[in-house]
Image 1: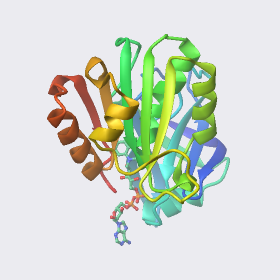
Image 2: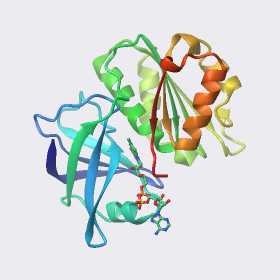
Image 3: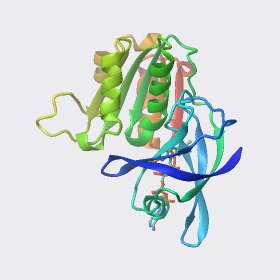
Length: 232
Ligand SMILES: Cc1cc2nc3c(=O)[nH]c(=O)nc-3n(C[C@H](O)[C@H](O)[C@H](O)COP(=O)(O)OP(=O)(O)OC[C@H]3O[C@@H](n4cnc5c(N)ncnc54)[C@H](O)[C@@H]3O)c2cc1C
């Protein structure tokens, strides 16, 4: 469906990531992990981008997407928008979804690839699906981690939801996991990876490397679900 939506809330997530919220039409149904197209005026024209719905279908009052502000045209126009400005939304689309159909899953994200994962985590947490879920999220530095506090709260609240962050450019005082996602990190933090359906989302290069890694580790192709955030 297509509809116009005034922005109701803008939430800074990190130094270059913001979430935008607006009212959810009553008849707008979607699955955790899906995306929609967001159209906005850019330099006298209308531009549209696919953006993941970072809210959860369980959140009835609003829809949310979360954009990495790249400093390019579309990002700058979005960054300049204020509460009350109107977006055009078209969707939902996509098959990178989770509705509780698997007992054990692993979510592996790179950078802004966290957006479908936070929707899935929010969904599992709200619905109390009981899914055994491990999220392994890779970022450059601690200040780049979006939704960090919320994920930590979910980790504390649900014994079956575990959050692991790895940083590729960690400061010396970072106590957690360091380095790009590799076989050692997967074996250390997702030791039962062979038993899990693995969702991978991020920039194309990270996706390619992670899929190759998982296949080399023996994970069957059909056990890996992918969403590349093309455009970076
Ligand atoms: C299914 C799907 C889901 C997605 N979900 C998300 C999401 O949840 N969050 C998110 O942030 N992104 C998401 N993306 C990516 C998103 O759609 C954009 O492609 C991406 O964020 C880049 O947006 P931008 O603001 O840089 O766009 P643009 O301004 O159009 O820039 C796009 C690219 O064009 C080039 N470019 C643009 N202007 C210039 C210039 N003046 N000079 C040189 N190069 C230039 C740059 O390489 C730039 O990165 C998703 C993509 C897909 C396919």
